[in-house]
Each structure stands twice: as C-alpha cells, then as structure tokens.
Image (tube, rainbow, N blue to C red):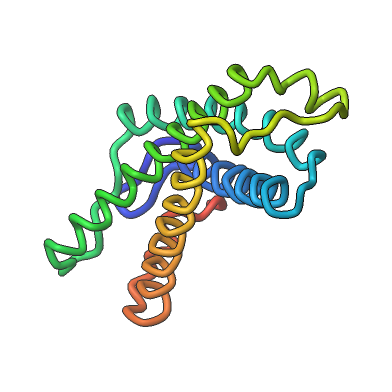
Length: 169
C-alpha cells in the first residue's frame, strides 16, 4: 500500500489512475455539453465531479501520510520545481473546477433540470462559468505537460519513470 523507495504504493497508483479516468470523463463530458449542446453529458459530468472531489480529498490525505519516491538521479532543479508545481496544480485545479461547477449548479438550480431532462438554464450567463471554463483549459494544459514529461522520461531519458506509477506488483 505504501510507497517503496523507487515507486508509488498500490493505493497511490490506484488513486492516480482512477483520478486520470475521472478527469478525462469530466473534460470530455464538460466540453461535449458546452460545445456539442449535449445536456445528457451533464448527467455524467455532475456525478463524476462529486466522485472526483471525494477522490481528490482522499488523495491529498494519503499524499500527506505517504512518502513519495525521489525524482530520478540527476534531475535538474528547474525540472524538479516544474514537476512539484505541476503535481500540486493537478490537485488544486480539479478542486477549483468542482467548486465552481457546484456553484453553477446551485446558483442556477440546474440539478433537477439536468437529471429530469428538462430545459437547462443558461450557464453562459453565470459569472462562475468563466473561471470554470478557464480552469478546464488550464487542466488540459497541465495534463499535456504531465503526460509529455512522463513520456519524455520514459522514451527519451529511458529512466523508467512510468514504472513508478504502475498498478501491478
């Protein structure tokens, strides 16, 4: 369950990959609802957001309790800083998105309409819509940076960084 000296523990790895799946579901359903006008996408988006909130809080509690394996030897200080900042933002930004999303649903009283299939309120008129949309785009950029860095370590530096987050033994 706990991290080893060279990799994350099973629980942290499970949290990571479930959060990754939820974030992709959230982004996909959110953009589908916004750009495609698909209200049914919000029926996935809302419960996934609540699950992401619970999971992110659990991840934070676990991360404070568990130790992280060190970065690969020879990691330049600027890369270590970018990695640390990106990882922190990958916790903070989803929490901000959940809060702004919950705020939009509460202010607009949209929950009943979303799950009853009724006409949705005009989310574009809500002030929280702006930070929610910007947060989603920031999260996309963070994911691109995170995934790009992981693939760079795996295939260019060949330091097997991805093995630190595997689920198996």
